[in-house]
Length: 354
Image (cartoon, rainbow, N blue to C red):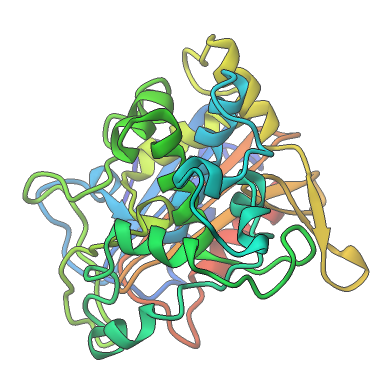
């Protein structure tokens, strides 16, 4: 196990106490590779551990599959394009994807905002996704469902609810958002995300596909069997990103204003402010709050914004506290299981750390 910071002080919030906190938290996570990283106003502490022997590249510099923790990147991209005046939140997706093509009236009403905030009425995945995915559910469920099939499934969809009336988490919807923004700008999703989000924030180690050999973390099944890199097929915007814990801290620090050389571009600054603003409530007594792209909960230290993600063999957690500048990035290389403590441990670091 290694700690990037060198403990010197012992007061709460000091490097020494933070290093001990992370070491204790990592001990509660069962995975071959674990990285827990905290930034306090830009001052970082990173703890690495896990049951496997470390490789030649430090764990905090490996790229981990983010799964659904890719969605905040998609949300920031949409917010920046809106700030630039290139699209509007109320633009209708079908009009941008297939102008003039007859679609169901409910599909016609689905806007970019509906897609991002999981209020489109679309299911989690297209109905015809499952027959081809089930035979390879534990190895490659998405790879044989390409982008054009996602778009076709959207254009012939029959939403379960009128858009804007109910919240239902949907990888399908966010994937459609990605294809819609690519169509609206005439730019492939990977290029668009890189130009608008990754490059401006200096996220050079964040990619949408596996990097050079040895630079990506290896996921594992519950029994510890290694898995190949995940192919997300046409669901790129919903879960294809791979990133290092250090890049993830930089991404989070941009939201708290603690990133070195914080972006001065007005559109990016406006987007970063927009994605932390609450936009909807749901659930019993409207207890659950959401921004455009983050889940928001209360804590003793002010609101916390977070998003978790999981792939076939990896997990990721991103979160920050806007009021205090605390940010938490966590990764692990074992598939989630019933008694898994990864998300709960990372969430506790975010909500209970002074």
